[in-house]
Length: 118
Length: 113
Image (tube, rainbow over all chains, first blue to last red):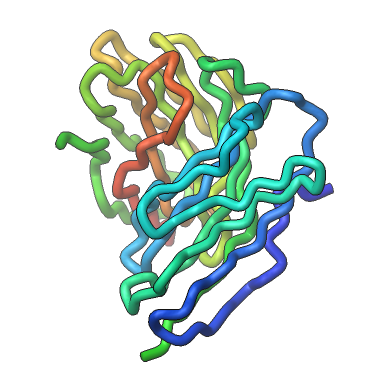
């Protein structure tokens, strides 16, 4: 079974609109971390936002926020006021068994290709 | 701010050759991860090191090996290269005990002909 599911292979959004990118996850661990990364066409992986499983508040980083619904096992990324430069691949990822340390690798979803139109 | 450095940035090899990719983590980061991203694919975790010891192992082929040195830089050694090894190889680093993002390097694009 997929540990990270991103159901939107591609999305077209008008500039200045808000965008929600879906991510659901599957884990039996109580302690885990959820991440969103942006990958522009140039290829680099850019960290956007992190949510720990025990964090009670939804994470926010500037125009990015993470809508964390633990019971539903979803961690959707919300981008407010989208910009042309937001066009990129967006990956949701999970680190299981997080306990504040260790070096467990991330499991990524298949990604969502977001295109912002003027 | 210093970032993760990877070298070389591009590498072209023939089938059955060997390749060595290098990663220099952010200063004071003691944890290194390697990921492989095939064309149009999501990154796949290969292996990680914490304080120079192997910490976690993902889908790393037996033909590949890696290590972390005393200065915390890491090398990924790839032997008997196959066409399917053509990919973008990322190194990421993390400060031990931290819980947040793995900082990714720019990647090494390996092409096997």
